[in-house]
Length: 329
Image 1 (cartoon, rainbow, N blue to C red):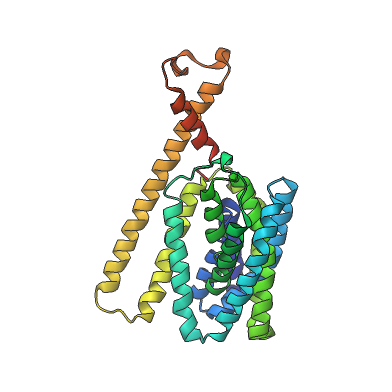
Image 2: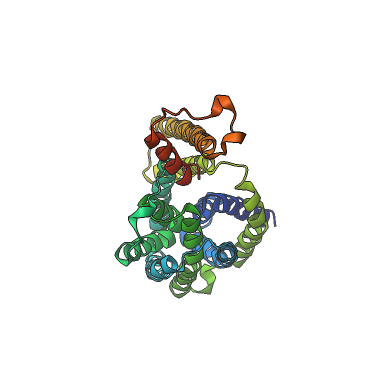
């Protein structure tokens, strides 16, 4: 019972992260399940089965608030399902000893990617046109495969790729990725069912994760309004990197003082990423303040904050573009 309560808290924490970032439910859950001794394939299978419920609830909420681009969902979900099914079959065929470093390496890479992604802003370019199927199809295939073999990765792979393209609003990127993840989670669960059988799903863990995630869903909606996602993403990325580095060094049988040196270097990189994310966050907020002052009616703008007539128009346009890009998301 104590272990199930801990796992429910894991599901709650993972949903808080996912609700604030639009990614990392699987990464956070799988990393923490591996820490408490769950086998890699069982961890990924249980997380994906729980995700069927959490993604269905998230997708319905995004649809209700108009955050879903159904064209993108259709073109990314089906290839994602194919990749997830193939990845689940691949992971099911590996032994626990072989799967642990493989899964840790994927989680470590995605954690590092989160650090990089949230230590810099992303630009939006709505004039670039719609996303094409020849981009969405391969993206869904790769993201689905990584998601099932790594216990998570659909959001960290798909969401940044769509944001970097600059062709969608951030809220629609997150809504479309979360909605399509329902199909991906169902396909991964089917693959694990065929590869592992019903004993591959640890149902008490599934229900505990699901309960924690459903409790956290409304809290995450409130949390996203007060906690900057820029900082949250960098924080979670560092936790995932350090946790899975331990598994990788153990599998490589590193001894002596080398693990300490590695931990110190990773911690220094984490601190640097946090510092950069704070810098980006503050800069973005200053730019939004400039845009607000520039677009406010003249009778409501204080004299000392009104933009100068000699200010270049390009600077205001650049600030506006950055403010609308969701850089601090």
